[in-house]
Image 1 (cartoon, helix red, strand yellow):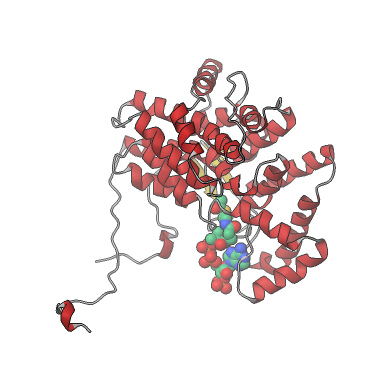
Image 2: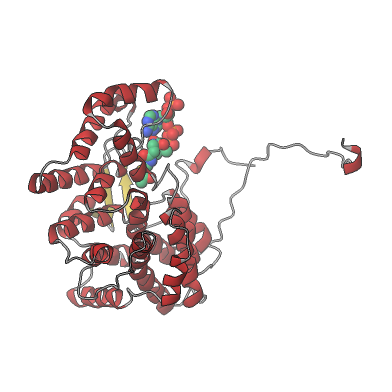
Length: 378
Ligand code: ACO
């Protein structure tokens, strides 16, 4: 007998996990039991990644070792660069990333997925090389040369350096690092779930991550930051915010950057990103795009707040990425640079007690139809 059907598997536990915890009513998000606000304030992306992978903070020695291992694996093979060069310059960066990650799996076979050494090495490789692939496509599609990574820089400093070849601005790198911490993990979201389904077949981690990248790309998930900035640019001026939102809602269309399957209060990550944006623009001068975003949140709250629909993590992140000089269609790829940590933490956890995912369905078709030969079907 089939259990109650829950569209989108809403509220149905797909696995047991220690990686992270969310309470959507209270607006609480924890990684390994530590509140996201504390990690955003005090941790770094690589330390947070270690926490996700091992369910505890590293010692000094462990942190140095892990950071060195990641820094050491940042370069990509010239044949991966050649592959990226062959991709169309107007293609979506998430497709380029997905293709390059799948190709990595051909260079670094990792079939023995239950072997802890294989797990560690492929985890380090993916966390290290995904930013290099993203930065390479950002430059190569414009006809610029790829910039080789530097192992003396932090994860975020190195990424900004690979985009511009300029000495990284430490405050901007800190802002990016905080964005990466906030996007690193979020319980059983769609991209993590799709990665877990792939992992449950004992597929290699490059296939797991490329499945997750394909899922993250969609506008209902990681594509939202890009669409928020596109929305703000199309609204253009403060006076147009109210008419724009009214028109959209009257047409029963969704406002991007608002709403979340889990959060019924403001996404705690959006609150942290907004504070970060305020600090950044107080220091660097006002941002018209940020001011417009605040106005959209204010008016959007008026229309949607009482329905429990508030801004989500992707509402303010795009404004920050734009300020860093990152192309708008690359925002989902920045999300992937962060979320690869969460995907891999769940991959390792899944393999501790693996069960092949094979859900049921409720059949809504017919039975006992007769086969009519093609010639008689008209
Ligand atoms: N704007 C206007 N109305 C909305 C919005 C929104 N952004 N989000 C939900 N609603 C309304 C729906 O129209 C629906 O109303 P109804 O009951 O009157 O028909 C109701 O709220 C429920 O909406 P669902 O889409 O069924 O709720 P769900 O929990 O599946 O929504 C989702 C979550 C998909 C994120 C949705 O809020 C959405 O599409 N938001 C816009 C896209 C977005 O910002 N995505 C990023 C999410 S964060 C992340 O993935 C990292």
